[in-house]
Image (cartoon, rainbow, N blue to C red; front, side, top):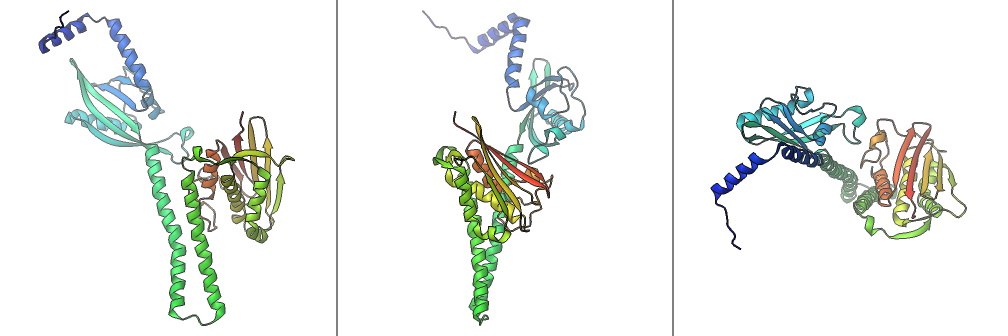
Length: 374
């Protein structure tokens, strides 16, 4: 058997012949196939001709531009949300080359994200031609999450630097005062040392919290799982916070099953969860007599733990950011601002969820749900 290779002209002739003999039904099937594939793409894809008629717009593009609708065979339109796209199309058409741009769109209220009320898109447009038809294709990539992570990291570093710099500056000032020999009596010396110790402990707490939340990132597989009693874990957290509890004198109520409530997980992180939730409530409510309730309920599918208090709570505008790192909102305490972030992440690495409901001055309820082994 002899294998014959076609020359370039022959190949071109063969392709032309194939195109001429291809049935319209076959071409329609190919278009439907490509349309189906492009609808699975997370990137928005828009194809228009030189008359600004929409040739194709995939599902992602329509979702990105909600509530504006892109219908094939209709003009692109001049809606305000399309200004950046029409501008980049015009630029690509004029320059006859690939161009890039940015687009920020406010979200409709029902689509509002937890951290941001706008989406950030990266645009890319380039000319296309097929036979006698020409136009512009546009690809839109959603960079919102990427930008949010970058901003969170920047905020984290900035806030951490500020939180550490304040106690360090105070300690440095007292050291200079002690070295100068200005302090002559024992009482003043002890007061200086107490302040230095207080702020050194504050720095240690900030660093410990930062290390904890760093370890919690992506550590689901590295949890040291054991079976423990949840009520005993809560008692340990209360004992750890004894100095603060003696000052605030809260009314604590624990409600757990008679056996104490068994749960499988990393005991270290559950200690962190309860310590931070109780400490947060006590620090944000300087009045004595805060009423606090910690309950545990078990079903066949999950463990439900609630931590409730009747303190100042969270304002409605602060609720979406309560678990954000270093976010304090209306809080006036000198905490690290990492406690609730640690709580949320620690619950999540155990496969659970945590919800917050607050009515300032009446009730604040943290509800933790953790799935149980089947």
